[in-house]
Each structure stands twice: as structure tokens, then as C-alpha cells.
Image 1 (cartoon, rainbow, N blue to C red):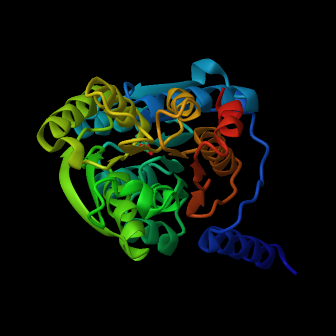
Image 2 (cartoon, rainbow, N blue to C red; image 1 turned 180 degrees about the vertical axis):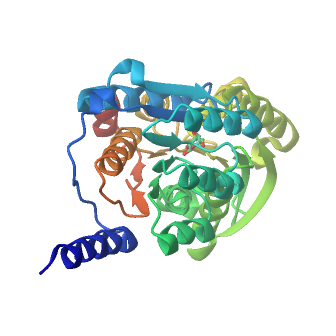
Image 3 (cartoon, rainbow, N blue to C red; image 1 turned 30 degrees about the horizontal axis):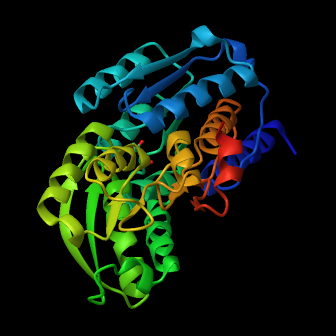
Amino acid sequence: MNKKVIALLLITAMLMASITGCGSSSLGDADLSKMKVGVCIYEFSDNFMTLFREELEDYLIDQGFSRENIIIVDAANNQETQTEQIDKFIADKVDVLIVNPVNTSFAETITNKAVKARIPLVYINREPDAAEEERWQDNGWNVTYVGNDARQSGTFQGEMIIELGLETVDLNGDGVIQYIMVEGDPESNATRYRTEYSVKALTDAGFQVECLSNQVGNWQQDQAQQIVADALEQYGNDIEVVFCNNDAMALGALQSIEAAGRTVGTDIFLVGVDALSEALENILAGKMTGTVFNDHITQSHMAADAAITFINGGTNAYYIDSGYVKVTSDNVQKILDMVK
Ligand code: GAL
């Protein structure tokens, strides 16, 4: 074979690798200590994302990146701020971008910027929609999402209530589960899915449900505390279940439940998502019904691994999922040992 043919074969092989885009391969062996990582977080004050970003930074350093080359910025829940931060990272020629988008519907613009600058992009935590993910695949771009399918966490929340049995949860004996829902930030797909799938699990199992109140708590403990205090004042003993889209809000809910003289597990039931250690301690003490482990350790490691694969010229699957775990008093100690 002459040199031209060999070169052509090589280019074809490289193109095929980038088009298939599945599996992961590590081609090069870059000096990670010289590589720059730009990390954009939607909101530093978010409890779960704080655990995530701290673990991500530590793990990147363990893999060989220098601390000064890992730049982590806070968008303070403002998409405009985040867009400016991404533009700056691109101008500074970072080697890889890890983005927790403020607004998932803005992902198309973010992707276009990264692709144009030829910078690989790893989305974390907030999943862009299916059409956007297909675009990465159709174009063979170095873009991926690392996180979870939020539908599963909602289903698990519903299942934990189902597993208690209708006789236990239906405190007023009317054959209907009366609940309140405290929702996360409306910009996040996790909010939509957890709200929908927690209740869907109940109705799929043949339970009748009645939503007494549905309010946005923006993932924040203090907002949830107020929402649940108001709901308890308005609906009192009619409330049988409190669904919170995350644990920070469940902790706020618990403060108001206790202040109202109600007792979780006896005259009200409470579930969250994330498995924050404080929530796990409450499950252990019987003060929360359950939560769903949102594994920030595995997710942050998978995100860093995907970034390293891209830096080394390899490809990643377009969707990388760590899976959720249901947490009740049965397995809470095991999860607590993992996160502590
Ligand atoms: C969710 C998590 C929430 C919040 C949100 C931010 O996965 O359960 O607590 O951190 O991500 O997007």
C-alpha cells in the first residue's frame, strides 16, 4: 500500500470511531497536569451540587490534574452569567468543559459554542432533552451527559409509599392518598420527572391520589419549610404524604412537620431524593420515611473519566448513567457509610 492509501485508511478509521461514539477508548496519554478544565456550576449554594463539585475537584486532582488548572465557577442560577463564563473558558482555550447548565433548554447554544471551538463537553446533573442528545450522536460530536434518569428517582419515591401499604398511609381511611408536592427549580428536568413519576408509581399500582398543594421550593430548604408550614396550616391532618423533589427541601419540610406537632411514620410520611447525610440520619432516627440515593461520588468520577477520555482523543457514550438507589430504614446505614 502506498502512503496515500494508508493515510486515507487512517482518516477513515478515525472518522468511524468518532461517528459510532459509543463505548469509550483511551487513545493518547496526555499529561493531565498541564490540561485545563473549565467547570460551570449552575448554583454554588445548592447542597447536592456542592457535594458533587467538591468530589469532582478532588477526583480530578487524584487523576493528575493540577489544582490551579481546574477552574470552577458559579453561575448563581443565571444563564446569562453562565454563558459569559463559557465564552471566557473558550477564549482561555480550556482543554475540556464540564457544564451543569442553568437552563437545559439553552444546551443547544452551549453545545454549538463548544463544538465550534473544538472543545469537548461533558454535561453534568441537568440532562438536556432527547433531541439535543440525538444531535451529538448524529454529528459524532465530543459531547456527553453524565447523570441519572430522574424518572427513576420519582418512581422510587412512589414505591417507598406503596411498600408501606394503603392501610398504613391512608390515615383518614377514605381510600385516597392525600399528598402535597414540593418541587425543585422549574428549569430542571429532574423537577418535572420526579413530580410526575412519584405520583405515577402510585396510580400505576392502583392507588387513588389527591394533590392538596403543589409548590415550587427551588431545591431550597428554607423555601420548602415555609411552603410546608403553610400547607400544614391550611390542610392540617388531611395531609398524609409529603413528596419533596430533593432532600434539602425534605429537611425544611421536616422542620415544619415537627413544629406542627406531627410525627413522621405515625401520622404523616415524608420522602426526598439525594441521600444527604442529614437526611440519612433522619431516616435512621425514624424522622423521614425514605430518600433516593443520587450518587454524586460515582457521577463526578464518571464525568471526570469522560473528560479524560475526550482529552486523550477517545470517545464516550452520549448518555452515562450512575443509577439511583432507594433508601429506607432497611439499607440506610449502608448508604450512610458510603457518603460519610
Ligand atoms: C438534582 C438534585 C437536587 C439539585 C438539582 C440541581 O439532581 O437532586 O438536589 O441539586 O439536581 O440541578
